[in-house]
Image (cartoon, rainbow, N blue to C red; front, top):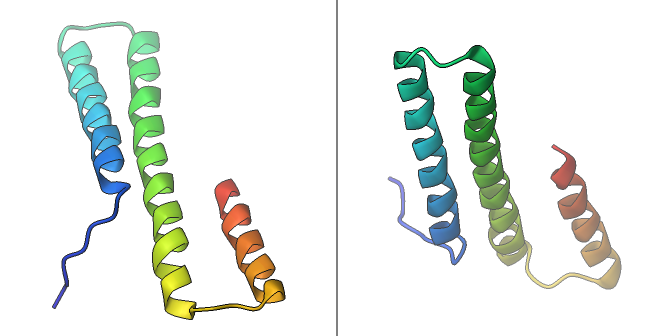
Length: 92
């Protein structure tokens, strides 16, 4: 059974995904209207970037809140290691 939870970041993530949805709808419309491949590729890039940014925001929020809450209080060294882990995930 899945439990329902929301985070403060979810409205911003929803906004990003709605933007991606709009870009995707525009891309489909562009294809139907016979727009140039360059225009379509640019629009697809916008779709991809919007989804990627939403995914990054979701993962970062999860790590910042869920992971930190799971492990509880940490020593200074442990906190440093956790912070490094969070920082390196920006490059995924």
